Amino acid sequence: TDPTIEDLVGDVSPSFGHVLSCVFGVKDHESRTYLTLTAHPDSTVAELADVLDRDRSNVNRSLDASEKGLAERRRRLLDDGGYVHQDTAIPIPEAKTRLHDPFDEWRRGVQDASAAVDPARRVAGRVQDG
Image (cartoon, rainbow, N blue to C red; front, side, top):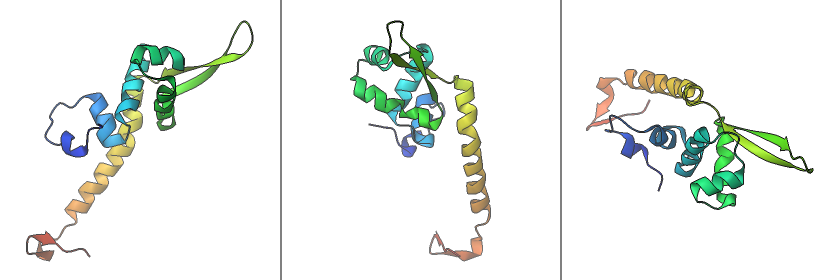
């Protein structure tokens, strides 16, 4: 199962895959596919399926992580006609930047919201809205 944010809290050294899953909404199978793709650039779905020991249709769905900006898909023409799609992961430092920017914005919003809590509005151990 995918890790939850509760699993992340208290983990002082979470893995990159764990952070992808918990914080950024990248499912565990998507992060495994992405991390595998970093080691196997320009792979086809069939090649990734072999490496991951998963069905091609599942790997193809996992590559939807490219919609999150983690992978790029290119079409390569075959010598005998036709084409094949090849996927390449964006470099991990770039992925971190792309993911950190929205996370930092969210974190600032949480900090602002918590700073705005008025202790005088506490009622029976709870903070009243408003």
